[in-house]
Length: 238
Image (cartoon, rainbow, N blue to C red; front, side, top):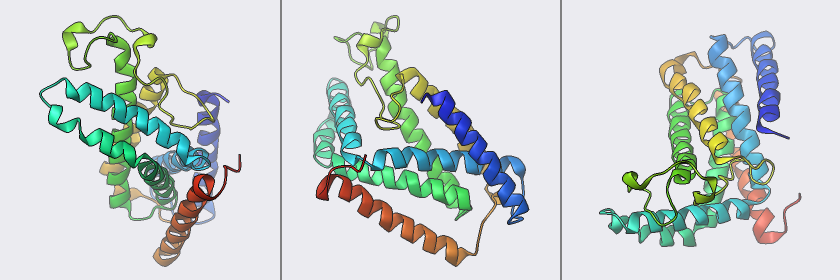
């Protein structure tokens, strides 16, 4: 499957969910907001789901990033930051689990419309974080291997062989994305992220608050247990 195919499926699913929100639950305040809720939420749920089957894969990818960040900052006036990354690398599995679970939980909160203001800001922060990672991955293609990322005068024509991390791991091993595509995907997601901040009051909200919270708690516990089981207690299911 390609990213384009996946986005088409997600877009169709978002249309179906939006129609259900309107005609089954009568909760739609703004069709555009509801559609973007369902699209972004479904994309995040799927992205987290294909990674939680093997959290170690995401942990290894984080170690790659931490290693490159250490090297990058060590040669600048911000060298005091460099020692932080080896420390973070030791806990890459924990960071992997946190990132994956947060992605799934945020996807759920968008789809059901839980805590609109908080969800909007959390979504924006996570998308900005992902954009920074994928942007770094892509932009290192312009940096010769013997030059520091922040030495902008040394940047040359793009060469994929120069990239410090060759895959962002956005969809685990399900889809391997070209870094340029990964970066553009996250830049695109900034559009609904900013839109949510401006129009969070128009979020549709499904079910009663107590039911949304129970669903949130169950999904959180299930995601953590399932993720841990896929590397601590057993090998991944698939």
